[in-house]
Length: 238
Image 1 (cartoon, one colour):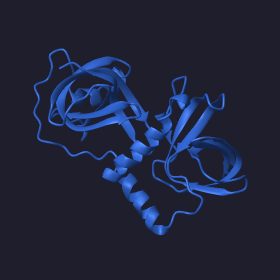
Image 2: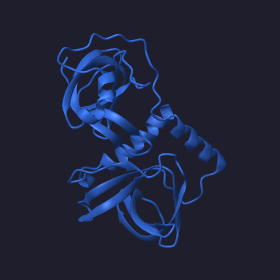
Image 3: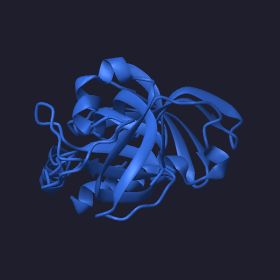
Image 4: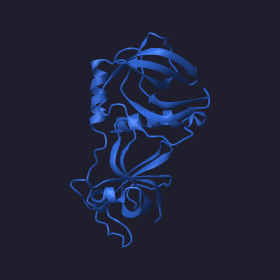
């Protein structure tokens, strides 16, 4: 699990670490392949904008752009990768160019992945988003919803701001410019008992919090991190 978190941090940090390369418009993020297929692509064009290299590549007859940590390749060379995040309407101030769609790749290399690396990649992705149900019992809010209700009524609640109370069971700070808070309240809907809240607020594992945020469904952050439902831009009220 530590490796999975580390990989996610690398992907997200790569896309957000440079103020000059911050998207100027909202973007939709999605995984290239959540099952961690190793991709082999041919370089068609290359533009260096330190510390990155922007590559136009071809894979199975399809051309697309990808950004990698600066690497020594030229047209005709092959690049291999397994983990990427798609950014739409990404504007590079360094290049003064807006990419309708570009992949941010964190594990690009010029030689094929060996058998051991492929096994490690597969194992890491297979463990993504598996949470352990804790023995939690929270008194529901009179003016809020439970985690069970959020999952059960996700389509009805999508786009609405709700309040929920729960115990923090996991806290991952400063990933893609936000903190990731997982809470549980003891309720369960068809085996779904863990709720992700993205927030700028800090909490500690074990805290019982009241949070408010917008319900978002089918959110894909890339690198295999897909959430059926979450609270976005959450505020910790208590």
